[in-house]
Image (tube, rainbow, N blue to C red; front, side, top):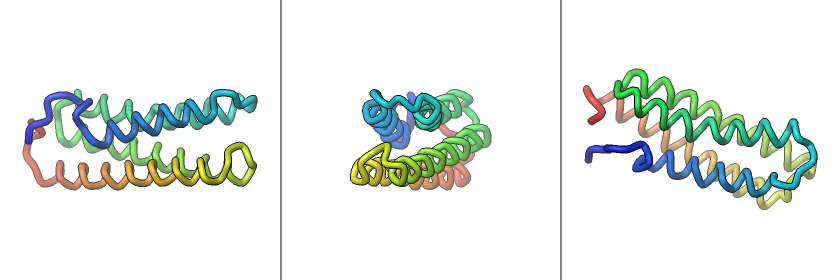
Length: 121
């Protein structure tokens, strides 16, 4: 299957859902530093997938996917903190952390598949 647009990438779709949900969950939070950091980390996941895809080279794309994986870890780390500091109900934090982890696993699979191919499309 040839992927023509980054919007077709499952990891990007999951990252978009994660980002939208993070924005909704933290919409009314008054801790602007925390809010800004977790939102920026979530946005970083989807934007690095998009930017890397547009570079059109598997090696460069993989590098951006690794950055996206790092941002997934940052989101999960901040969700743990949000839960412990009671900035977010535990169930919400756990659901979002699972989505971030799932996105990270999909990214790992994509990175692995890119390393086995000569060209992306």
